[in-house]
Amino acid sequence: MPGSEILESIVPRSIIIGNSILDKIPQIIDSLRFKPKVMVLSGTKTRQIVGEEVYAILEDKDIPFDTLIVEEASLEAAITYQDRVKDTGSNIMICAGGGKVIDVGKYCSFKANQKTELISVPTTTSHDGIASPFIFLNDPTETYIGESRPPVAIVADIDKIIQHPDLPRYLAAGVGDTVGKMTAIWDWRYAHRIKSVKFSRFVGGVLQSADSLFQHQVSEALLDQEHAIKVVLKALLIAGVLMGTSNDIRVGYGSEHLFSQALHSETTGIDILHGERVALGTILMAKLQGQDYEQIIKILESAGCPTNIDDLEEEVDSESIISALRKAHKVDSIYTILGETGLSKKAAKTLATQTNVIP
Image (cartoon, rainbow, N blue to C red):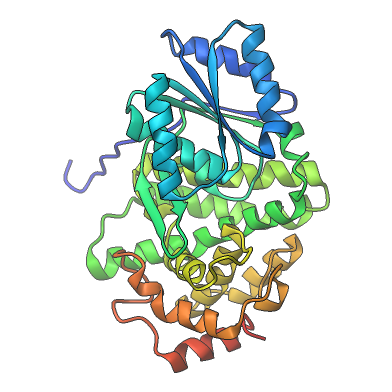
């Protein structure tokens, strides 16, 4: 039929959210119907929170496995980890940790052996990488963005997520990454209109409906920590799955992420979470797009997410914000509200002060 959409979807087969559900992992492995060679990835902290329990569950079911501790999430480190995965011949990877562990796992599973399946066991709710087919690996001056396959399954154990030592901050960062979809979907539609970029009306409609529901739920949900985890987690999962449904990163990646990556380059060595950078970028880009950026600020403030440089854990100067705004359009070739020439220094400073990102 002329004008009809054809979607090639790459999505997880199974998503399990609940309390004390790590014992579901052997069932997922059995469902894959091949002899498992498992590699369990975790971070130095997340090994204690969830990794060691996964080891015990696999041992109890006589499922052989190797282990790998992810100490760094740069592209260079991921290449080294990939060699280890290839040497073991692993065909299943269980990534028990935060976004860095899961992104490294997605890179290794895709590069080492494209038949390797990945099970995502998130310990934070800080960004949508827990479910998406895309990879973000930060090097000191730039970010590697690559495509992989999404996890075959996601096992989100609320009891483990709630044990994270810096839960409020990471939960707030998840809110920051989620509100970023508001500016990303605007940019995607804009690129479709101006540059005839392929746009999925189905995916765009679902994402906007999910974002609207999230905005209505999140402030009340934040009054109860466990409920807040579920609301933010579901929003991030929906975004990640929709990236796979459309096989397009633009679902959750627009001008706010371009700013985030540019700011990362400007603030090397400074402790700013991905979702915190995206939150600032969303405020700035929503203003440029003519969206209600003040409402976005209210949502972020209710979550305790930074809305200006004074709210950040470590000091970031105003020049870093202005420089990131001016460089953001060069980060990626995708077309956004920033256009092809970006902002002048005067325009960047005006935008940052009008939105109070620079108080």
